[in-house]
Length: 295
Image (cartoon, rainbow, N blue to C red; front, side, top):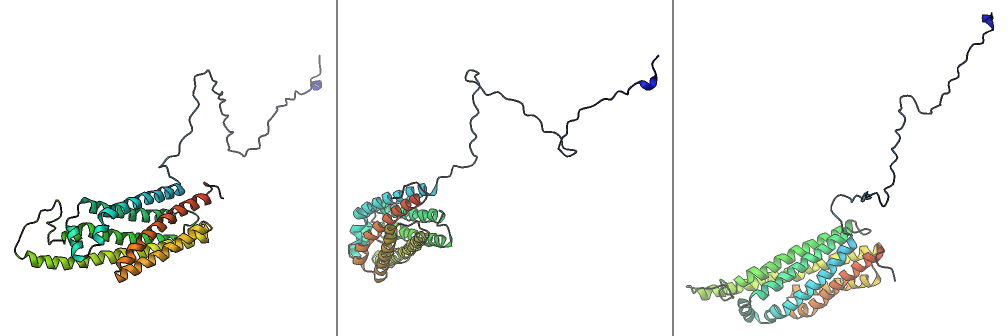
């Protein structure tokens, strides 16, 4: 019979895995193993998700589009003006009134194209003022000046399209599509309308040449200085911008003096300078952003 004192106690050793996680934190769930879809399994790979919201075009592309649009619009407006506006502008006072009395839809289309040109100018300035690295208070001020010039320009163009034709004969009866009627006192009314015609014509000329052109010139100068300061404008752009400001000053003088020769010979060069400036600026911005390699 064995002695109970000789029985060795049974020792149970339990293995315990140490966990470094603090108390109360559940262990991470094991991700289910997903096999890669094979070529023959028929499962198509998931398409990448597209970002929500509208697609935003880069500013350099918008500037280039506006610059070329401005070129085409200015060319179209210049061609129409040569055939429909210039003949009446070169005539004497009474002959000019008579020409406008018989002007048709070509007169309206020509000034309508110039209105689109003004809108393109202010759009280009607005986009440029929000393009890094020239987005600051100075470029914002330049865009505001261009916007003010555009507003004045549009008002003057409306005077050319709507107001002046109605003053050519008292009621615009000689214009195609507008039938006039004889009425007592028509001769006296015609003289008053002729004087009023000259007054509104001077208002439209001075507003377009002095105010609008002056504001455009200042906007180009401010924008050019800021572009050069930020290392965006090329030397050619800086020169064109300065010449645009100088040419605008000549047109402002012609508008103040009501000198038809100055306005006639300076207008086309200033328009060409501005178009060249927009194209050059668009190229400079694209070069700065690495789209066009630097020469």
